[in-house]
Length: 205
Image (cartoon, rainbow, N blue to C red; front, side, top):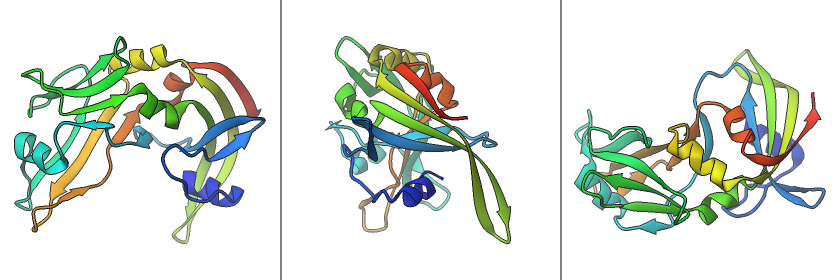
């Protein structure tokens, strides 16, 4: 849905760190949400700024053989409990980092809040109903909210509380290289994140 909105607004595909648009002087990321969706929301896909292990090394150390006989690591991480691979998330507001940590205290991947700020500083959330007809999906936009100025301490609390999760999605190809589908940052509801913004404005209702 987000791609559909960007296409309608004439927004070209952009790189990490580039805003989708500028609204009244604010650089803004646009996020779309189907109102009937019960799935976890993808905030963004973001690889770590600090990698103490590369993808292949991660899979060799923490991965498993999947149903196709490939070394893989498909797992969702939170701060609340360790996975069978011994991995969980760590929220460290003092050092302004969020990391993956194992049971031995090693941190193979680390994100700084500056990495995350690029994607979440200001958001425009667009809610839409959807339907399918003859294999084509159609949207009707019903509500849009502008959220300005991410409160970073609040975001750290969402991570610490287990609301924000990280989804690792990778496997090794036959030639030994990594196939990484993108590290997804996920959340059950947009409303949990919107409360972490200093200003909120309804643009459409």
